[in-house]
Length: 168
Image 1 (tube, rainbow, N blue to C red):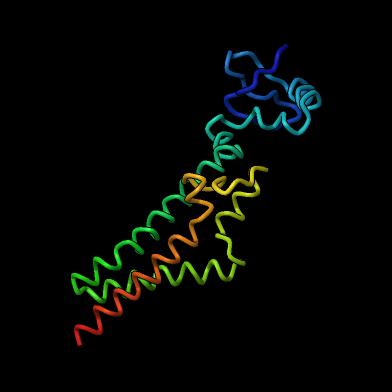
Image 2 (cartoon, rainbow, N blue to C red):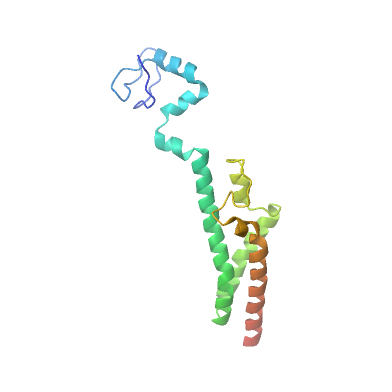
């Protein structure tokens, strides 16, 4: 009797056989234990539905982290680029709010020794350590991200300050 990789449901019992597999053939406990002995710890993986296995796959988790990291980066870059616009429109409360978001992220980076927490999380799922292994950015931008956007942030904050002083 062959044990198939995706049984419909698993009922553990010593006297009652397990439920039927996908093809309707009965699966008894001896067949299950033989299968697990043959495949070791990875044998349990075949009994988990494919969609759940896909979510726990390291490649899929790394992709999810990269998407999240890129989205967070886009929001922060948008905050930095919106600062002079808010200054020229004289929306200083919005400029303060955007600045607070960026300063909060700078605090997170400082607390994590200059590295984004998502980067340290992504290192668990790959051995790749290129500058953009954890984010969907060109490698030159990922490598120079802090220098480029740090400079932009300081310049844009000076623009906001200058426009605020002129208002007084």
